[in-house]
Length: 191
Image (tube, rainbow, N blue to C red; front, side):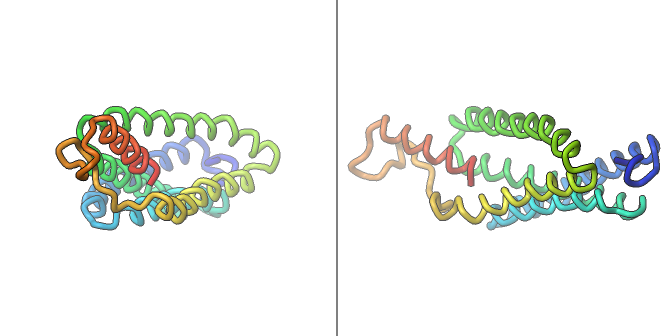
């Protein structure tokens, strides 16, 4: 893309990649404050949406300075989304479930990366570089926005983690507590 869209060649690609990384590092510093806020789901959804938009705009960027700003923004918002997601998981789950939930989350992330790696070349070959990048950059944030709006309506985030010592009266069986913990873990991953 650096060569085809911006006409900058290998050096331009290296510079874009470097600026993306610098944006990620500065996004990490800024995300500490965001991750401690009480409204993590909007931070997560907003960061996810805002991390994809710059990639789409890169397809229409006319010159390298604009592309560098967009790459910086993409790096910063990507890291902010990651920190918000991990904070939600870590604070929503009992320690006994964190490993399993991280396994599920990482598996889903790898699956989406593989899907992107397979589908992006096909989309670009059908539509061309610029339209393909726009479609791909809009699809991810659109899905994140839809899920952020829809999932809380079916799985409220105000649920408390139920452990055997905090189970409601009348439902103290370990099996019921385990089932509630697993439902809550799934809710934390998806919401």
